[in-house]
Image 1 (cartoon, helix red, strand yellow):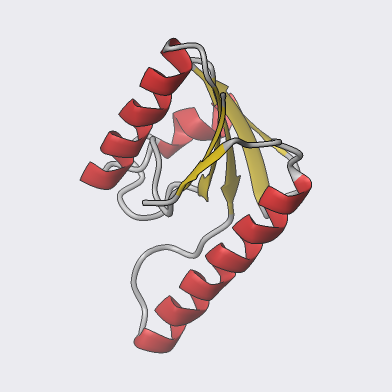
Image 2 (image 1 turned 180 degrees about the vertical axis):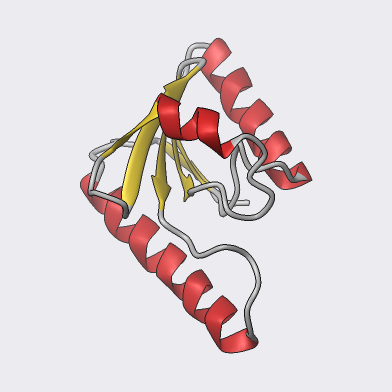
Length: 117
C-alpha cells in the first residue's frame, strides 16, 4: 500500500506530534508499505537541524528539501521560524497547505491512503 502523510511537523522537529507521526511513518514502512511524508522544514523546536540539513538534499532550492530515512521519503517545505504575529502565522499556515498541495500533486506518489493529522 502507498501511504501519503501530510503533517505540519515531522522529525527532526522536537515536538510530540512530530514524534508520533515519525513513529507511525516508520512503523508503516517497516510493515512493507511505501510511505511518503509532506511536511515543513524543522521550524517549531528543530532539535538537531544541522543533521537534518546534511541528510536532506535540495529539490527546489530553499523551498523544498528531500530526505529519506528508515524507508520513509519526506519532502520538507520551507517555513518561517515559529513566532510572529497573527498575520504571519496565518500566512505561514496558508503557505504550508498550498505548497504541500502542489507538491503532493506533483510528487507522483500514487497513494492509496492519505493521512493528515
